Length: 492
Image 1 (cartoon, rainbow, N blue to C red):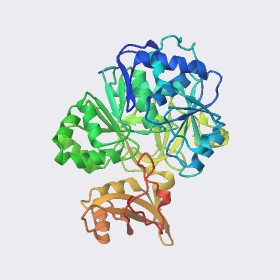
Image 2 (cartoon, rainbow, N blue to C red; image 1 turned 45 degrees about the vertical axis):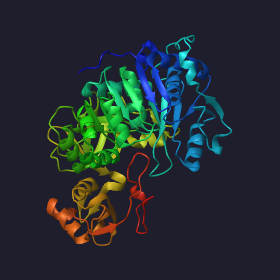
Image 3 (cartoon, rainbow, N blue to C red; image 1 turned 90 degrees about the vertical axis):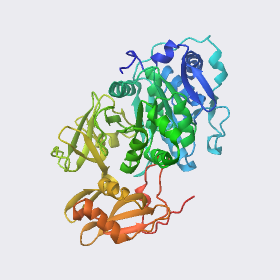
Image 4 (cartoon, one colour; image 1 turned 180 degrees about the vertical axis):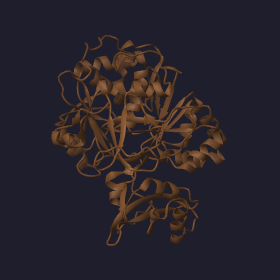
């Protein structure tokens, strides 16, 4: 199914303003016409502001504020409402923020009390008096999104409207995304996955998006039964969906009725994938992207499933997998290398950090920091992050991702992370951090032997550490830098 029509600008569908549903949030629903009205009115007020903070709660005000900033040519910085004070203070100072867009119902932390606050009145969506802003150059308005800061202070990633549009056009062509689609998700709105793909994506296509506010299996079921055709989720969400399928035939039927199930922001467990296929007949497709590049690869809907792969490069996107000398490694589905990307969707740079930007680029290629292997047909399989997931042990370069995937397949393992720790003999030794499943009794040597049986022996863990919980960020990604010999995470 092709995209319904070609769009000439990122917000064209909103500017046209047809009388059909555009967005639903827990606090209400707006048609494209109503969204156009609200965006037009707010955009006129934002012209003199630069840049703006956006308190990114799952409310209609967030969607209106985001689109009004982009329509007016104003840079906008989404803030994570769950961030700690130190994180928020860093973003405020780094981006020079003094004005905040928020829902009038939002309770803001004291740190933001001195900022000029623009409350978004959703009721103005019924006012048709404001004209749409004059043409704004595609690179005038920017979305500035901050990285998670796992290897240092969060960095502001500057994304132009033209880069976002190019990326959405590419992924829409692969997915057959059309105006008839109805996207369902509950992803955070301060992140590329939830905000760019999950909000700007459907609004660019002219489709409908329903945000659940917070994730629940019941919420997903209800939304899909009500007509949702696409579901976006992260692996931890699909894990909960998979666990619920045995006792929930309505959920299985709801998944079966969807057109597209998409997973991202981390590797999907093979066991969860297989449960969903058995129960619903639906294949979850995986895609790969990051803040600086937007979306890089995707599996193709309807193609033979390849669990563990994140697909091929999107149209207009180029990828390379290289060794430490920047020479392409063989496309043999075995040789690990660093993933480089070149595309029209690359970021404009890190805010106020030209030196760091320059370090990340080489002849137009961006170094993602990810490790991967290429199959002979160009399909990409990720094996981890260079900073945390490349282990050099006994002369071998080992990606932690394939070890984690094997351990996930053990029936007694609920969650797992693999890291490398300094070792006088090996350089680094492989350590597996294991969360046992409910009622499971696990033996460390059994797990080590299980990996050695499925992978080459040098990839087996030399040590197993049992914990009750692994540290994860808001997107469900494991924060490996927090795993130390003193780690004793407990459930909350």
